Length: 347
Ligand SMILES: CC(C)(COP(=O)(O)OP(=O)(O)OC[C@H]1O[C@@H](n2cnc3c(N)ncnc32)[C@H](O)[C@@H]1OP(=O)(O)O)[C@@H](O)C(=O)NCCC(=O)NCCS
Image (cartoon, rainbow, N blue to C red; front, side, top):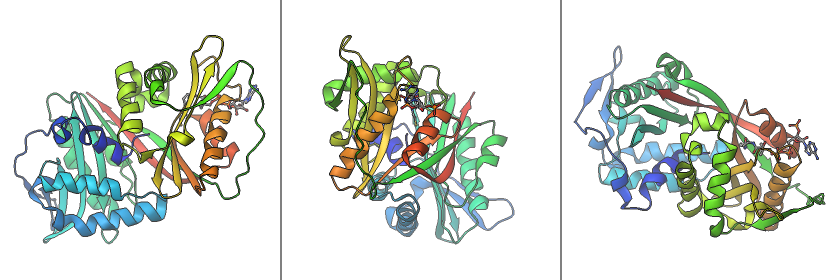
C-alpha cells in the first residue's frame, strides 16, 4: 500500500531529496470558490507556521482513527513547505487555513499525496473544492497521462467528484488486528519450502515476485508500479530502504523459498507505523503456489514476530474486491477500521 508518507518519501527522502519531485508551473494563484467566502491559494504561498495547527489536527486524527503516527509525514510535509516546493492547494477562510491538499508529479504520473479538511468545516464542501482544483491542474499538465489518488477520508466522501472527473474507483479497507490475544500457532510443515527472514539481498528477486504476482491483478490497476520490474523495485526501495510507509521492520518480514528451484514464492513485508503498531506493506504469493496456505503462513510468521517484540497491533490495507485476501485477513482476526477510495484517471 502507499499512503501519503510513501508518496512524499518516494520522491523526497533520498536521491537529491527534493529534486526528484517535479512541480508544474508554480504560478501564484488565488481563487474564490463560487458561492462561498473560501479562497483557494497555492500551497507554495504559505509558510509552515500558517499550516501548523491544521497539520497537528490531521496527525491527531491519524493517531485516533488509524493508530498511525503521522508525525513523520507531517515533518516531511513541513520540510517541503519550508522551501515552498510542495505543489498543492490551501483553502482559506479569511486568513485561516481550513484544508489543504498536495500532489507530486513523476514523469507521466500525478499522485495526490494527501487531502485534509479541518473537522470544524464542511468536509465534502471544502474537500471537493480542493480536490477539484488539484485534479483540474493535473489534467491540464501536458505530460500527465495518469493520476492516482488514495485519500484517507476523515469524514469527507470525495468519490462523487472523482467519478465526475472520469476516475475509476476502487474501494479499499484499512484493517486492524489486536496482537494482545495473539497466540503462536503450530504451523503445518510445508514440504520443500523454507521460510527466511528478510534480507536486502532479497530485493531484486522480490521485485520480480511482485511483478509476476500483480501482472493481472486489481492492485496493479491501482498502483502501476506493480506492473513493471523497475516499478516494483522502486516500490520496494520506498518501503524497505526509505521510510515510505513507516519504518521497515526486517524482524517481522519474511520470504518463502522453494528449496528445489531456489525460487522465491512468497513474501510478507512489515513496517512500524507507530510505537507498538506494525503495518503489512506487502503480502504476495506467486500464482501457482496460491491457495496452499502460504499467505496465511507468511502472515502468521509476521504476527508471531511482532508479538515477540511486544507490539500491540498490526494494520494493513486491502482492495475490497480482492476477496481471497480479505477472507484471509478476516479469518486471521483482522477487522475493518475504515473504507477509503483509491481513484485512477487515465487520459
Ligand atoms: C492474497 C494472497 C497473498 C493469499 O495467499 P494464499 O497463499 O493464496 O492464501 P492461503 O492459501 O493462505 O489462503 C487463501 C485460500 O487458500 C485456502 N487454503 C489454505 N490452505 C489450503 C490448502 N492446503 N489447500 C487448499 N486450499 C487452501 C484458504 O482456505 C483460502 O481459501 P479461500 O480463498 O477459498 O478462502 C495471494 O492470493 C496473493 O498473492 N494474491 C495476489 C497479491 C495479493 O492480493 N496480495 C494481498 C494484497 S492486500
